[in-house]
Length: 189
Image (tube, rainbow, N blue to C red; front, side, top):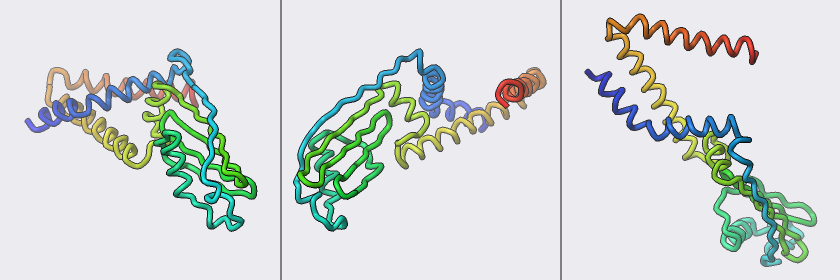
């Protein structure tokens, strides 16, 4: 039967993502038990003064600054903000479990970086939430949701073909939905 085949193989294909989202659901819900591994590190450096000290802010070498900071300071996260004011340029990089804020003095090209890493648990929690992960990971989350929905629906459809278990299964499923709603209505709402 096609439904059984779909249920089995969709379950196996989606096993990794279901397991990942189940584990990270626990690490998110009980963050205090998994330890707060946030590490902050300060760094200093200097870049080409010509990139930042032009009075015309349209001539600030944004690409060169970002690429220099990535190479010199081993940053692979995406740029989330780039600001220019009279005395400094600030660049923020963000990725799952990581951020770096750079403040560059426009007069002399000297910069300060504050790097923050949330550790492995922070990384997987950000992946679970899709925080600072970009378009590709957003597609992974969407495909995961579609797979989980398909596995659930094919499982329910299979239950309908088991005459001896059909009624009991439908009652248990309805009770599960009812209890989740009841918890919401009593303690959350």
